[in-house]
Length: 272
Image 1 (cartoon, rainbow, N blue to C red):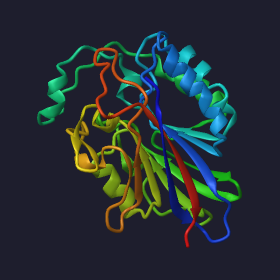
Image 2: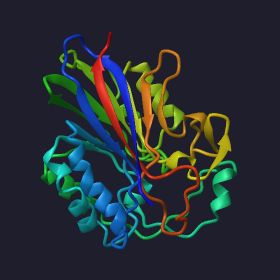
Image 3: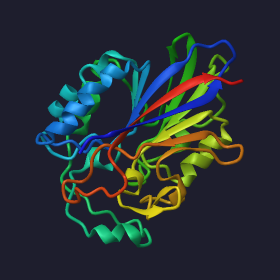
Image 4: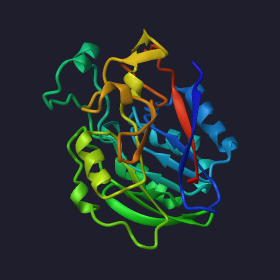
């Protein structure tokens, strides 16, 4: 199965600023056997992004770290930011797929510990910024960007208070990065007046029903409303939100219906 490149433009930069092409991907769920997905990931460098953002769930196998670093090799020469998701910490286990449609009681079925520290070290050694509960300032195309992130909310590893607070006065743009877009994180980032939030986790619903104008997600696997399961959305005076439907799936549920694998190319441009 090929992937879809979801493209959007967001008017969030100061007047006169140069555009910034952001490649946002999520939920690779890579194993050594996913040759087509690996080839697709390697091709992303040809999109010539100025900044790369990953919202986690790189892994789906104990031996996947060299695979991930190899697939991302070309992109690791470009400024990048990342956070982790639950599948970076624990290997997947079989579960009833219909459980995603029931009320979430906070119980998680997790597998063996994965060597996520090795993945973090491999990414940061090449220059990407680990923003799990961290704030950084980077400059891209002359724009100073403050980025802040949280660890995975699906496992309740998030603690936004560690990065909360006023935006650095030197920043021209403030972005938030998180794996699972739980409302508590979106509301906290909105309170701090961030401009854009990047998230993943939802798989776009993974199985979507045909609907007027396209298709409709049955779940987001968190408390985000289903209509926001993928793509760029905005609520009232909140930040823009881009949710990536992701590239992969659990090895035990390799079915996507009306929600193809995707990556996002978001062009940040000056506000009119």
